[in-house]
Each structure stands twice: as C-alpha cells, then as structure tokens.
Amino acid sequence: MRRGGDDDARLRRRIRWTVLLLVIMALVFYVGAIVKQMQ
Amino acid sequence: MTAMTHEAEHHGPPSNFFQRWLFTTNHKDIGTLYLVFSLVMFFIGGAMALIIRAELFQPGLQLVDPYFFNQMTTLHALVMIFGAVMPAFTGLANWMIPIMIGAPDMALPRMNNWSFWLLPFAFAILLSTLFMPGGGPAGGWTMYPPLMLQHGMSFPFVIFSVHLMGISSIMGAINVIATVLNMRAPGMSLMKMPMFAWAWLITGFLIIGVMPVLAGAITMLLTDQYFGTTFFSAAGGGDPVLYQHIFWFFGHPEVYIMILPAFGIISAIIPTFSRKPLFGYSSMVYAIASIAFLSFLVWAHHMFTVGMLLAGSLFFMYATMVISVPTGVKVFNWVATMWRGSLTFETPMLFAIAFVILFTIGGFSGLMLSIVPADFQYHDTYFVVAHFHYVLVTGAVFSIIAATYYWLPKWTGHMYDERLGKWHFWLSVIFVNILFFPQHFLGLAGMPRRIPDYALQFAEFNMISTIGAFGFGFAQLIFLWVIIKCVRGGEKAPAKVWDGAEGLEWTLSSPPPYHSFTTPPVIPETEAPAR
Image 1 (cartoon, each protein chain N blue to C red):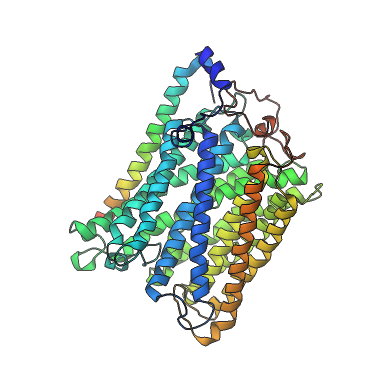
Image 2 (cartoon, rainbow over the protein chains, first blue to last red; image 1 turned 60 degrees about the vertical axis):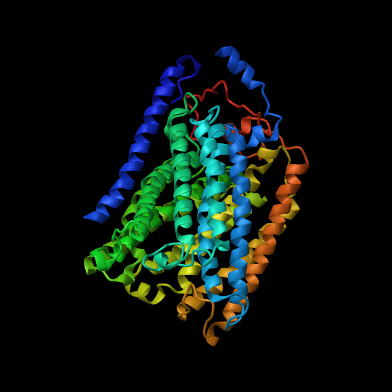
C-alpha cells in the first residue's frame, strides 16, 4: 500500500526490496535453465 | 519536497520533441510510445502474413522463393509476439495501471524509459537480418536446433535481439509488479483492485518466471554455435529434445502472458456496457492465478510427437485439460455479467463479445489438441495454426483493439468515430473467420504448416483463407484511420466517457493531466471491488 508523501523513504525501501527480489528470481530462472541442461 | 510536488503537478510535457519522447519518464508518454511501436509492428507483421497468404493463394510456387517464405513465417511470429502483442499490453499497463490504482507514475520511471527504448533497437536488429547474406532466420520462431544453427549470418543477430526483447519484457514486468504492490492508493486493497491490474500482476510473475528460461535456452544455442559447447548436440553428449523442453517451458506460459492481460481488459469492458458489476470478482482473480500456475505444468503438450513415457503423456494431457476449468469459470462469469444487464453495443463491447465467442472456439480446438492420440494427427498441421490464431488474433489482438476503442477517448480527449468503429468491427469479425476457420478443415485433412506449396486437394480452402486475410488486413486500415482521426480532433470526451464505467481512471479529465494523482485519492473501506 502506498504510504503517502510523508513517508517517502519507506516507500523507496519497499520498492527497492521488491525489485531486488524480482531480479534475483529472474536470475535464478536464467541460471537454473542452463544448470538443468548441464545435468 | 512539497513545493516540488506542487510545482510538478502543474507541469505539462517538455516542449522539446526529443526531450519529451526520448528522455521521458512519464508513464502516459511511455505508454503511448509502446502503443505506437506495437501498431507499427502489427502492420509489419501483418504485411509478412499477407506475403505468406498470397503465396498460398494457389498451389505451386507463385511469388516468393521457398526459403524467403520460411523467413516470413519465422519473422511474422517473432514480430507479432514480441513486437506487437506483448508491447501493446505493456503500453496499456503503462497508461492505465497508475491511473487505475491512484499512483502518480510507475514505481521505476527511468527504468521504464529504458525498457521501451530497447525495443526499437531489438527489432531494428531483427529486421535488418532480412538484408544480410543468407537472409533472416528461417527455422521457425521456436528456433529449434540443429536447424537454427544451420543459418548464415543472421543467427547471432537474432539471438542478440531476442535477448534484448527479453530484457525489455522483464524490466517492464518488474516495473508493473513493483507499482501494483507498492503504489496503490490508500484503502485500495488487493481485492479491490481493477481486474486489469490483477491480470497484469500475475502476468508480470509469469514473465519473470519464463523469459529468463528462454534467454538461457538461446544463450546455450549461442555457445553451442560459437564456443564449442554441446548442450543440444547428440554428437557431444547433448540432447536436442531437451531444447524443446526448455523452450516450451517458456513457450506455454508465454501464451498466457499474451492472454491474461486480455482477460483483464474484457473484465473491464463487459461490466461497463452491461451496466452491472463484474460477476464473481474473486473467482476471476483465483481463475487467473490458477491458469498461471497450471501454465507451468503443461509445456510438453507442444511436443507429444517427440515421444515420451505414457505416464508423461497422460500427465500433460490431463493437466492441459484441467486449464479449461478456470478458463470456463471466466467465460461463465463474463456471460453472467451480461445476463439481464442493460446492454449497449458500442465498438469496444462488440469486440469484447466477439472475444468471448471466438476465444472460446480457440479454447475448444486447444482441448482437441490436448488429446494425445488425436494430437498425433493434428500436430504440425493447419489445425494448430487455426487454433492459435483464434486464441491470439480473435483473443489477444481483439482485446487490444477493444481496449483501444474503450480508452482512446480517455487518452486523446476526443470521441472516436463510432460509425467507422462499427465498420471496422464487422469487417474484422467477418474476414477473420473467413481467414482462419477454413484452416481447421485444412489441418484435419492433413495440410502441414510452414510450407509454401501444397497438394491440389487443399486449393479451395486456401483460396478462401487468403481472401479472408486480405479483407482482414484492409479492415485494419480503417482502425488506423479511426485512431489518426481521433488523435487529430473530434467531439470532446467527458471525464467519464462511458456512463456505466467505474474506477479511478474515470475521475480524471480526458485527456488526464500530464501528472495525475500526485496526491493519492483515498478509497473508502466500504467501496466495492473495482472491475
């Protein structure tokens, strides 16, 4: 939920964590596809 | 900060053309860029389709070299999937999601600019392969080895451009998810979100789950070709069939990436023109989530004929059939929304109703294809071509057209020409069926796909199909004219364009201010779910 203008830092932190988790997820699928093929 | 926000609210777009369109971080401008790009790609991919259909007008070789024909089938698919349908949905998400959930912009506006601007470069590279020695890719959009590795110069360019498209889609998806999860207006819980935002949230996870898998597969193709690996070469201990497994692990969810946002659009349009709330909001959400989950479990139904264990075939057959349950829930809910509604049939509603009927036909032929013994007959025939074009043209593309008519007055501030819109609808719906319905019969009679020539027995249906293709292509020129006319002027559109429409986007003026919802709207606790 958006926290409004009085808590910008918190919103930034939440967005940063969301992006980090999603990027990790994408990398896991990329590397996973290649590793699976190597087995 | 407050002063800056206040100032920003009154800012219009930059007056410099390049500053506005090249460096923009505004979600509305980036949405427009995506939509215009997608329209251009739609016509390029459509021209390729017309070359294919012109060649198939009569048996025998007519117009183009068979090798060029194969390049057209390959590029038509790549352009339409990655250049037309996916960017159109991303454009709609960019334009509509922030103003539907009461956010001032996307969560990551600068990355948003980058996600878009990768696309023109990716497609410039892809289309430039047509002018290279040996021509463009001709092994099919699935890029199966070893066929794909036997091409000339185009191969590394195609791999590079598909990687760029993948990066662009992943960044777009990250942006949508981060926006929907973090930027909703106070009081808008997940279960009060418009269905389009829900559909895109789930689509975003699908994109992040499978686009990297495609990237992995084609990276391995590249290393097999240039770095001495043998991932897909039996001679070196690899296995070409495993490529197919990896590709379709991406490929099947990709189909849903192209249809789930369409479900969101149809769930917005039908209630508006039925003047009733959407029937079964929560069941719609669970149905989309179930379809997305199941899409990861059915990939091998694209490759029954490569041979697999009986248990494997049965699993993939039944898992595929199970998808029809949540899909049936959605079709039922759309019909139930219309049931005893106060219906009117403006162009967006006409396309939405055509979607429900014709997409369901595509769904039924999909069920036929899921039956393993029957699939051995249908595989790689025109029946498959008919099936996925019913899903993608009368499904995905019709939903994009419906969305354009529905939101065009909101975007431009002008009403579109309803009479021309109706002409566009009726010509499209008649010709699209003339184009694709006979292909079912061709496939059942055994005509293989991806060939420039065919036996005489298939001549009549091919001729009918080609006439349909040119009619459908002509009808899209009307669409182009309607859009240009509407952008240039017309009757002034009110904020709430459709009297039955509900949602935050209709509280903004038409066109909305360049910066909207810089102060978040508050959604009352008691408010019913949006559409």
